[in-house]
Amino acid sequence: MNDSIRFILNGEDISLSSLRPTETLLDFLRLNRHLTGTKEGCAEGDCGACTVLVGRLIDGGLHYESVNACIRFVGSLHATHVVTVEHLAARDGTLHPVQQAMVDCHGSQCGFCTPGFVMSLYGLWLSTEKPSREQIEKSLQGNLCRCTGYEPIVKAAEQVSQKRPSALFDPLEKTRSDIVARLWAMQGGDTINMTSSDGDRLIVPGSVSALAQVLADEPKATVVAGSTDVGLWVTKQMRKLDPVVFINHLTDLQKITVDDTGLSIGAGVTYSRAFTAIAEKIPALASLINRIGGEQVRNMGTIGGNIANGSPIGDTPPPLIALGATVKLRSVAGSRTLPLEDFFIDYGKQDRNPGEFVEGIFVPYPAEDIHFAVYKISKRRDEDISALCGAFHLALDQAGNVADIRIAFGGMAGTPKRARTVEAELMGKPWTEATVTAARPAFDADYTPLTDWRATAEYRQLTAKNLLIRFYLETAGAPQELKRFATVEA
Image 1: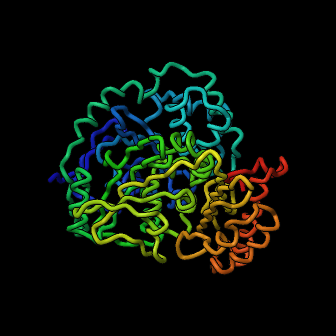
Image 2: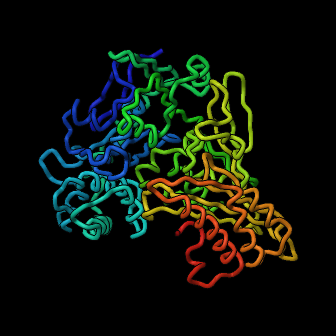
Image 3: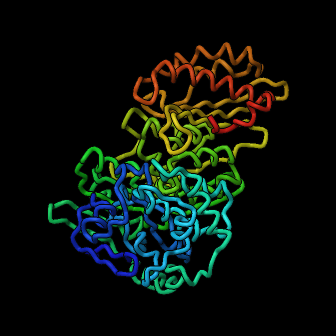
């Protein structure tokens, strides 16, 4: 057993032997370390004012990602390098090129959101030498500005990429080898088990096998991977979580295996890390991932967590169900695999025995002749929770009849759920507008959605019916103005 969380903060080694499991990185920075450049705006990972970088060793290399400090727990930072806006400027006060570009392009007014924008652009600076306009905008999806407007900030990103000075100026480039060595020294196979002064417990398993044993001993523990949802349980609902088990460091849960039949994705793989493999094999699903939160949320959140959470409005379950994905569960008793659609039993209830955890998922590739699309409907295009999300997987026979179809929706029931009555109405029939129109009333038998602040029940039901029409129009050779909205551009 180990009794301390160790990480690097800017240039300083940190070792914490007493820590509340729900202490956020934002509170630690501002209240404990007095690093007040990192701001609290929303406390729910939405506005980006609290953006910092977290570096970790992946496949032998040091990779930095922008994250939301307001919902990132300090207990998840073992063997990482946390970088705040205070670390960018030189000791003589000379601004980092990213900061100077923000000044030159007038990218700040009130300045409250500016440190978050700077850190997001700094993350882009580290990962992409000459980013496109699209890459710049994607990196800023998770940062909201109330007064400056985004164009000056985008221009700052363009300026610093066009006139990129020597990397030796950059504090992380100058110290990279030293940081790598220090992080290697922090890593190890021991399980960290810590009790705070309040009596709350924090556990960081040393391996996946150790995780299985921890959950066998603590079946009611809260397992935290990316904390993009659990973080809000603490910051918005003030929930007390005890014990908390952090798993985002477990490399065995962060593997992606690509073979001829599909993708095997570990439960700890983040949206950002999964994106490249998914984009190559299942582009429609990759387009959906681009609309899950902002870049910071995608850098933290995991596909396995999105599934294990069991939320009826989780974005990934509907398309994964439509694709025929399976989920692998593990415990000290061994592993078992089941169809993902069978994992969701009822609202807040999944087919997971005490001590079991999601180890990974397998996503089969759609065949070349398969029509597949997924549509996310939300009030704003970027960084918003779905009102509903629908996915369609269609196979036609040579005569143009429906040979197989799977339709799955989130936001329409207490769980992500297939539209089996609609599917039955379509099976074996010609794939025509008349067939699809006749099947639309069957949605009323499959779903009884609720009304909430995101949408009314009537809106959800009508939209689901209309998405079936849209899917038909796209697969049947829709007009160009409709086809350009294929996949998830709703």
